[in-house]
Image (cartoon, rainbow, N blue to C red):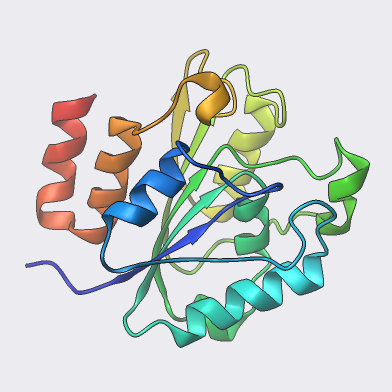
Length: 187
C-alpha cells in the first residue's frame, strides 16, 4: 500500500518552462508543489536552499523530491531538518557548478550519503555535467544510478517532454509496490 507523499518539484537554473517534464508532471500531480525561486538567472545557494527547505518543511506529507540540474545540487545542500522530511528523490541531470561561473556559489558539491532513497539519472552526452561526474555524485550520495545514452540534458531541448521512463522512476519512489513493475514496463 502506498504511503501518502508530497511531491516537491525542484527546477534548475532558469526554471523549467512549459513542455518540460517537470512542468507537465507538476500540473498532473494533485500532491505536487513546485519550488519557486526569487532569482532564476543568478542563483544564490543560500537563497535557493532556504526556499527549498521551507517548501519541504511546509509539505503536509513526507516528501519525494523531483529535482533537475541545479535543483539536484540545491537538494544535496539541504540541512538535516529538511532532509529528515524527505522519503525519496529523483535527481535528474545534475549540474556541475564548477563548469559555469554563474553557478559557482553551489560549489563545492556535498559528497555525503543522502539519508533517503534516491535515483540519479544522467546522460552520456549532457553538456552541463559529464556522465563520469554524475556517476561520482551517485556513488557519494548512495543513489541508484540510471545512465541514459545520448539523452542530452534530459529537458525539452533534448526531446524530453512527458518522459515516460522518468514518470515510472518517480512512481517507483512514491509507490514501491507498483513502481518497480512500471519501470520494467517502460524500460
